[in-house]
Each structure stands twice: as structure tokens, then as C-alpha cells.
Image (cartoon, rainbow, N blue to C red; front, side, top):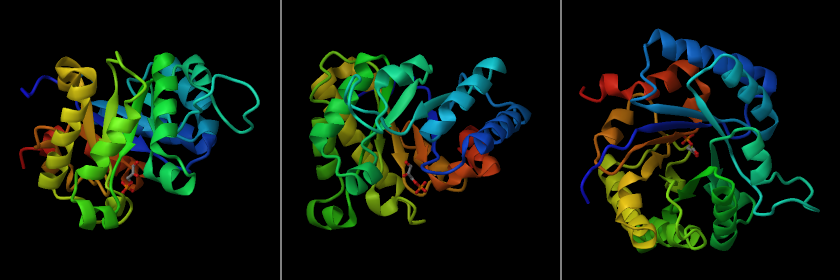
Length: 263
Ligand code: 13P
């Protein structure tokens, strides 16, 4: 599949870190850091994914100060509204102008029992409300030994896309579970191999044009020192960053990967 112009996407998944006051200070400083570095937001999109309680504050700051940063949520309910204590609907996220929502993160799959069916329902809910799902897939170390690198991510992505025929705007994140928070990132070659296989899945389900335009991210122990090696791969269009997204300098440097991609 020919490489088309896909705008690289650097996304920071804060997980359960930073309350709304910390979030305001963090986003302000991140915006200053990127401005100081003359970050070209048209060339590389940057987004933060704070906890739910921070979203309103982050939205207000971004809109009042006209920051070029995007933001999204870390999860969403598959339901519209009603008796679902503790849940947040895609309609609520849309009302906050959230551009994105992470769905099917491995921590949701393993700690909250989310299976492919649930992930597919959440993806459909997000798409229905015009929020771009960042669909996470990835194999465990056991899966890797047993089935190789792409089998499980491919199966998970097929499941996740099963309810959105006709969707045109999605993001996929390949996050090998063994690489998350371990300090041991996948090799760029492995990330490329799996991301290429995932693009084939998008092509099979949503068509070649959508597949060519879909950003596929790598996630798992991404740092400023290894981002360039991933971004050199033709099917890797960005990164979903966990730990390093909580360090302003490090995250800004990851977003500035173009400055070190040639090194
Ligand atoms: P780390 O970058 O901390 O490995 O986390 C990756 C991740 O889970 C992002 O969603």
C-alpha cells in the first residue's frame, strides 16, 4: 500500500495521574514548551488524554488560550445514557469537544474485563458521536511466544471494527502488553511488521482509502531516545505514550521527533 501523507500523531495517555489543577499547570507548560521549540502542529498533531475529572478544565484552557493541542478521554461507555452508574457516554465527551477517545487499552482489557465485543460496542458509540476512537490492540508476552507478534492484535482489531462499517476516521494503537511500562520497547522492525498487518485489517474492513489515511501508532516504553526509530517505519504514524507523557520536557521532545528523526 502506497505511503500517503498521514499527519503524525503523538498522544499522551496520562492514565490515572494528575488531578484537574495539576492538569491545568501541565497543559500550560506543555504548550509553552512546544511554542518555545516552534512546534509545527500542522506537521505533527499532539494530544493529551487526561482522566475524566480533568477534561472540562483542559477543554476550557485549550479553547480560551486557543492552544493547538488536542485532547481526548481514556474510555467511554457503549451506552447512550441511563442507569449505568459511574459511566461516561460518548455524547458527554462530544459536548466537551473531545476529539478522541482511547478504547480497549490493555489495562481496561485485563483489569476491567473488556473483551473484543465490548470494545467493538464502545468504538461504535464513539464513531456514532463523531469522536475518533484510538483503538488499542496488543499481545501479551505469552501470546507472543505462542502465536507470534501479529496474530492477536489482528484478531483484536477485526473484532473492534466489526460494528463500524462505513467509518472513515479512526486511529489504531499497537501496544504490546509486555512493552507497556516495562522499559522494554518492541523493536522498530516488529512494530512495523504488526502495524503493516493492522493496516491490512483496516483495508479489508473499511477499504483501501481509509486504510491509507488511518494513523497507526506504536505504544509501549516510548521515549525521546527511541521515538525516531519508530517514526522511520513506513507504517508507524505516531506514538501512544504513557509514562513519558507525564514529563513535559520528555513528551515535548517526543512530539519534536522530526528534529531527531534524521539522527
Ligand atoms: P508506557 O509508555 O508507560 O510504556 O505506556 C504505554 C501505554 O500504555 C500508553 O497507552
